[in-house]
Picture 1 (tube, helix red, strand yellow):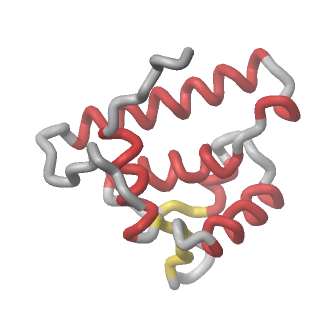
Picture 2 (cartoon, one colour):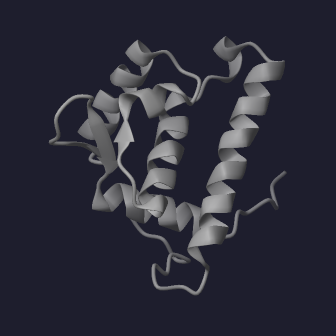
Amino acid sequence: MTCAYCDLGSPQSLELRLAAVREALAASHARRKLFPMEILSDPAWDILLVLYATTLRGEQCSMDALSAAGHPAKEVLRWIELLVGEGLVMPIATEAPACFRLTISGVSRMECFFSSPIDTSHY
């Protein structure tokens, strides 16, 4: 993975990144209120957003918190397995309930996404 704009030591504050994640989650939630979930479902991205937000807050993320993002627990588990396979998410060895976190690669990619300018020139 390369990220020309990714500077993990950048002065962009934790609060600004967390606010951007909250906005993205709020937009997903608002979108689900207006449109059928079947046509706009994006569970993998929602899971990554929730896990990134918990990483920024220094918290752990339970299955309940991931399901609270608006997707059924069964679907969340299926996507978690895929994200684990991609090396973006890992389970945290704890007692019940199951908890997850982003891997170093997952955090790095989310940092790159939220610190890179988005090219809108082709829209």
